[in-house]
Length: 467
Image (tube, rainbow, N blue to C red; front, side, top):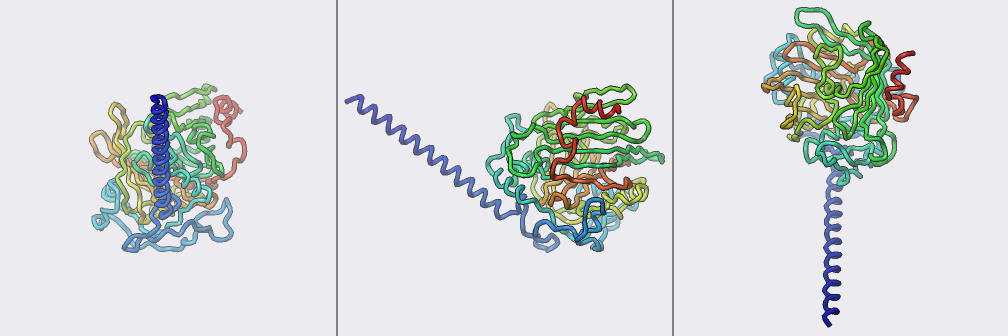
């Protein structure tokens, strides 16, 4: 009798537990379905489809194809649908207060401190889209993409796709920026990293190089992130000028789940490759007179581990957009890179909604810029603007990323950028194609030896550098 009662009780408990599990799973599925339905009301990348109330930001219509006749090697601007537009107005020292609420602290400082600096504002075009497979993968990531237990690195996602199209915090927003679709590779046959002269001098730092990025997880299709090595990208660059840098070369892996890069540097004078175990974060780049750190290229680069990232919200702001001037490989470098700033003829600004993320250095960590504000384009998640503040909370640097539509990938991207050192009056102009005679190229399929991880090893760096 007692045994029968026990069996009945145990069976009832098992039935109740199973019912609770079904209910919990059902609730999770319902919540996931509701969240996915919310994404379906947005663009495939998670942006608002509608424009703003004033009509100065239009509704999103998707990617625009280039005009007929475009192929790599031709100027991208010449095949853009809106190439003949004139600016709506100009922001300069005489009227900057009128537009201050739509400018960053760094932009305001540049206008107020640099004689003749101005920003020409053009009509807004929301022509950043994503391929269908990226949109599908982004949808799969809702409720499934995850961060690691370390609290900052990416653990799971379906790629290529945005891990967190509706971010809950600044860290998730930054991972969207880092995992934006850019194809599997980006190649420069030539680019110039330039640092403007010190005050009172006319001497530039100008380093000519070739560069390649390889992004393994950017392969077309739909794959779990864990199917690839835990690498955000591999990068190679080799200096060809000036004489002091010629022959030096770097091969590096930037990881998804490690704070430090794996960096190998070839020094021709020593005919050897050295491993650089701490060449990351705010380490000064070699040969740049402490004007340029490792985490400043392309507006932001590197691990997210040293900061707390706060998602402030969205803001309408004037940012570089459809800024083809920084990719004008037929222009003369001297006509574009002026002594105090990039010529206005090669900068273009539009009003866009951006995500605002504030970064504050973590307790126990250190960084030369302990506070930062980054602005991420709503439609592409590309970083288009970033202000750095020093230990006294004074504005130190302002970076602008020159966003353009990428005809090869069907998306938009930022590679070319300028960093203005507000305090010292110098600036860095990098990863552009001005004055080099050849265009940057995005690849959607692996092509050649540089689209393999084996190219970025110490042994291979030694082999290709000593030839």
